[in-house]
Length: 352
Image (cartoon, rainbow, N blue to C red; front, side):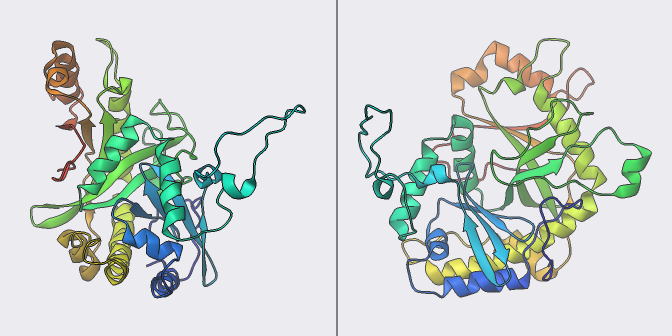
C-alpha cells in the first residue's frame, strides 16, 4: 500500500494503489445510511471502478462519472457538469435579448439525491459515448479478471542510456478524455493510454496482461501496403514501456488487487440478492492475499470487436488482419483476439 502519503498523478513514478486511510474512509461511507453516492455506486453492476494513485475513477462506458480524491480523512467525489443535466428541463425559449429561459433547478442537478441522480448522470454520459467505448464497456462487464482500465503511461522514446538509468514512467491525467492525446510517433512525447489490464495464470504464476481494444471500423487497424498501421506503432511503444518498467507495474498491481478485494467486501455489504455481482476473480484474491507482486507480460494483446460474419470474412479485411498477425517479418507480429458482437456477451473477452 501507499501508506498515508498522497501520490499525485503527476508523479514521475508509475503507481496505482489506495492508502489504508483512503480505504477506511470508503468503509465508513459504506456503513452510512442508504442514499449516499458510494453505496449507490457499489449497488450497481454496470459501473467500473478503477484504482489510481490515492484516488479512484468510477467509469460508465469510458466516462468518468466520479473521480474520488482524498483530503485528509475526507473523500471528495468530483464529476463533470455535463453529467449533471436533468431530464426535467424541456423546451427553452430564447428572449428578445438572446437569453435563454432556463431554471437551474430543473436544468441541472444541484445536489446528490440518491439513485435517481446517479441514474441520470449515467444517462447523460450515455448520450456522449461512441461505439468503441460502448462495445468496450460490454466486454469489461463480462470479464471479471479485469483489474484496470484507461491506463495512462507517459510515452517513451526509443530506449536510451538515460532511460535505463531512471527506471520511471511519467504518470498522466487519469480522467477519461482529459489526458493529452497519445502520440502517433514512437519517438515523440505525449501520453499512451492502454485500454485494459487483466490478471492471467501462465505456467503456474499470476501475470498482468495488457490489452488494446479497437472497434472493427477504427482506421488505426488498417494501412496501405508498405505503411505501418497506427495500432502496430501503439503496440510497439507499449512493448517497450511494459518491458522497461515491469517491476514498478507489478508492485502497483499487487496494491491494486488488495484495494479491489477490500472494495469487493464493501460491495457485498451493500448489494441485495438480486443485485449481487459475481464473486471476485480468484486470481485477484490470490494476488491480494499473497502480497507477492505479479509479473508483467511484456506482449500486449489487440482485441478487435464490433463486426459481423461478412465483415470478418471480407477479403480486404483478411489481408489487413494477416499483416497485423504475421510473424514472418512481413507483418507486425501482433497477438490478436477477435470477439465480434459485444452485446449480451457473458464470456471473458480478454485472454492471454
